[in-house]
Image 1: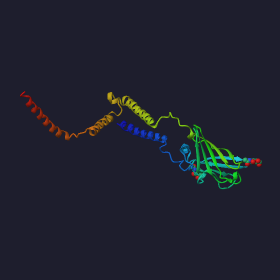
Image 2: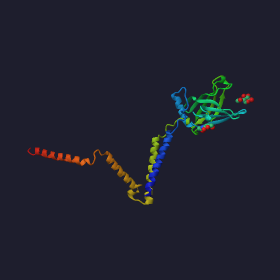
Image 3: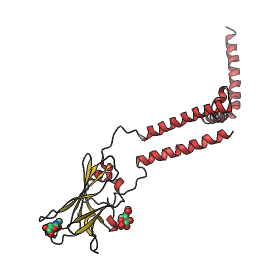
Image 4: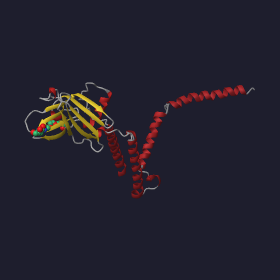
Length: 278
Ligand SMILES: *[C@@H]1O[C@H](CO)[C@@H](O)[C@H](O)[C@H]1NC(C)=O
Ligand SMILES: *[C@@H]1O[C@H](CO)[C@@H](O)[C@H](O)[C@H]1NC(C)=O
């Protein structure tokens, strides 16, 4: 009975794999990638907007920009050390000079604003401007918009607004499927498990039936795949049910019945005695 061993083991393996797949899709194993961001004015909506960015955590996003003769590289991370600089959410690296990177914004002073299909991340408290903007600390605004076709699109620099006295900022853009609205018609995890289970059972029954009928040449009930095994399972289940469900032990029953049967035997005789004289 080689067949008996093969389907059972592969059945279990497939089952475990499909459950893991579903759990992964549910995000049960997701990390706490956005927990490092500090929201000074924390609110429910800000935490929610930040949570949407979880799939983008722990990645460096880079973009190179050349203006006139100078080239800069910007590195952005969601709530992580951009380019490995501690505390920095966005940094600027001068590619033409060996200087230490300029911090544009820090993730310990984050603001997150979320709309239906976008999230705006604002990192403040960067390194102060040298000459512009009243030497206030730099600020980075990253606009992340929904794009169903990419998990993390290209980072681009939109503008560097520093020709004013205060409230200057660097504006970045990025596309990501992470901020797209959730489609409600998606199947729940439970129904996916059920559908996979039904499919596997159907494949097992049909495949087993064809194998038994065409290759083994079985007839009647023997065509049922692993017939002997399932008969055994049925008998064991019945035994188990008998053991669990029966309220009285079988060994006790005869003694108890003995007592009752005697009592029952006496009663009718007494009653008969009463009845006879009448
Ligand atoms: C580029 O160079 C021109 C001429 O030297 C200058 O007027 C302009 O401000 C520069 N642009 C930037 C962004 O530095
Ligand atoms: C981001 O870049 C820095 C510097 O290149 C590197 O040390 C760090 O490991 C990178 N982080 C990730 C998550 O790739």
